[in-house]
Image 1 (cartoon, rainbow, N blue to C red):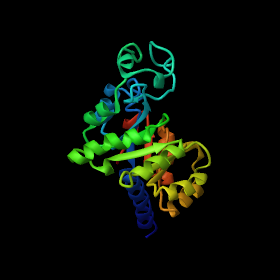
Image 2 (spheres, rainbow, N blue to C red; image 1 turned 90 degrees about the vertical axis):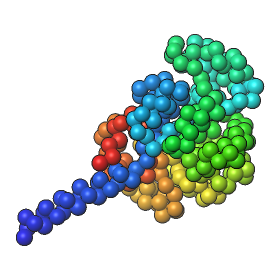
Image 3 (cartoon, rainbow, N blue to C red; image 1 turned 60 degrees about the vertical axis):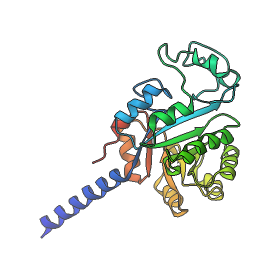
Length: 251
């Protein structure tokens, strides 16, 4: 009887772990940043090849008005150019090389590449991006080539999230934070947000329970080490944003 009870207990643990893992969204960070140059079309394509449920990218508005996919305000770290990306027009940006091999894409190019196959988490990185993002997305929605639930809008700039929410109540929102994730609950509720996207290092069993009690999902960043991934799965997060999507095993 004791042996049978032990077997049942062990099997239940395995079942619960597998259930948690299956339900977790695997979101490629800036495409598949651990494999190819971040925020480039090949990196995003690699993430799709690795079987992600979603892709996270960052956007700025360039000087000629287009939305371009890049993480840093300045170009020095990853490119053969310098200066602020928001101060360059698209023609100039097209000539820039990322890590001597890749180019900086537009949000439109990313939307066309993904084509609604997985969730696209668009982080509003630069200023005045909310209006242009909504305007571009509406062209896809009107053509019915993309559904609102295939997009997630996030930002550390909560004012920009407010602008987007006032324009669009259909596209889900996630509140990005690198501080105490509980402090993001009020703004998330006011925006009818789907999720809070916190730094995984700040998550605990207690604050996860409070976030979920508030009716919010948790998509945490940037979780790369296998042991960290396992901890996040055990804690019950809803999504893991990672440079290495293949490390999040869906059992």
